[in-house]
Structure formats: structure tokens, C-alpha cells
Image (cartoon, rainbow, N blue to C red; front, side, top):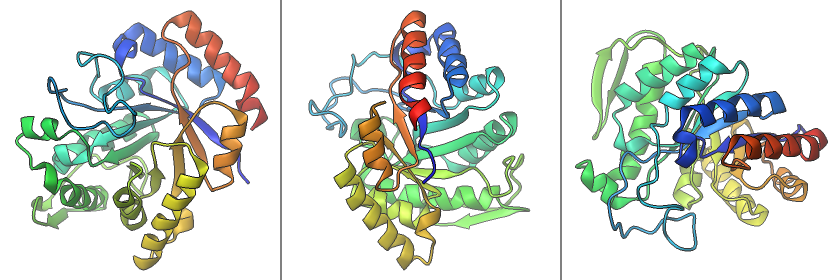
Length: 289
């Protein structure tokens, strides 16, 4: 069984919107042996939103509504210039809020700039008021997500590209640069709903539920596998990630159900705290995986 990789999440929000702290986080994470950095996305946070945040018992995003959340791709391009080995992932980009023509261009550019280190984690979104602010139908987000994934794969393939669907309709068009990797940028499906599990089985290069409980993960992975089999895909080739804590017992438990990457929150919010925390994780967790 391969060693589990550790990534860091929420690296573009709150204090990490500051370029000096972000630089310190990225370079220290690389020095300590972390595998990847993951950014989050909200283009706006509507005031007094009522949609329940699905990852917290409070139903609210941690922190104040005016918390800084940088664009998910620009910090990763910045990180590409100041690191050499870290993989650079969106965890997640809210794909149905964006046109795939722009996403294909931007993510392929990031992949080229980073020598093939980009990972496109995507989700369908939960914040209905944000979709309303963008003039998009929240209830069509699942279908838009599926079409956008298929559009990206077409745009990253060789030659001219076309896609004809209900929400996206283009081609033949030329979209360059292509990603650094001939297979394109891996598309990792985020979320821990049955719909996300099925989407990962149909379309994903990876599946990234935003939970860390082994029994629930096992249930979701079974749904993903069934959907992959139905679509004639190899479920074993879909890389499995999850959120969690940098604790050996937790990591071993999710490794036993097939997870190969655990993504954790940064261990501090200042340079000294980050250095201490990341070095501790490297010595007490990474070194023992």
C-alpha cells in the first residue's frame, strides 16, 4: 500500500491572502515534504445568506462574511513560481459558475507554468445566493457541471475542439496552450453527496469528499465504483482524497478504505506558528507514513 500524501487546504483565505504569509506557507510546506496546496473559491459572499454551509454544524462559513478569499487560480500561479515540486490544486473551484472556455485556458496555462503540477478540483456549489448574484440558475448547477467537465476534456484534447450541449455550445474552436500533460489536467470531483460520488464515477480522475470519517468514505467510494462500472470506467484508476487531521490513526483509517491523499488545514496563522506546526507534522506524521 502506497504512502498517503499530505496536502494543505484553505491556503488562499483569511490571513493567507497576504502574499508574504502565503509565500512562507508554500515554501515551508515544500521544504517539509507536503505534496500539495489547495485553494477554495467564492467570488462573493452575499450578506445574510440563508443557504446552509454543508461542512459545518453551524451552517455558516467559518470566519466573518468579509473574510478575504483570493481567486483560486492566481495564488497557485504565484506558488508555481516560488516552488518546484508542490502540486497546485483547487479545492474546489465552483465549476458551474464559470464558462469552460475560460477555465480551460486558465488551468492549462497554470499547468504549463508549473511544469505539469496543476490539479483541478471542482464542485457544483452550495451557496444559492452566490448563483443568484451571478445571474445563474442554482437548480441547473449539476447539469452545468457535467457539461463543463466534458467541455474541458474536449478543449484539452489535440486539435480543434467542439461541444454541443444545453448550457455550453461551441466549436470547432482552437484552444491553446494545451496542458503540459498529454492526458490533460486531472479533474478531481469534490463534495460528499451521492451526486458527487456518482459524478466522480462518471467523469473524475479523482474524488475528494470534504470529510474524513472512514465509514462514510467507504459508502461514498462504493457509490463511485458502481457508477464507474456502469459507465465502463476503471474505478481503481480514480485517485481518492479526503479532508482530515494530521493524526496517524485518522490517516491509517482512511488509507484502509483506499484514500491516498489527506488534505489538512494549515497549523498556524503566522510565520512562527506555521514553521513549528509544519515541521511537527513532518516529523510526527509524514516521516511515519
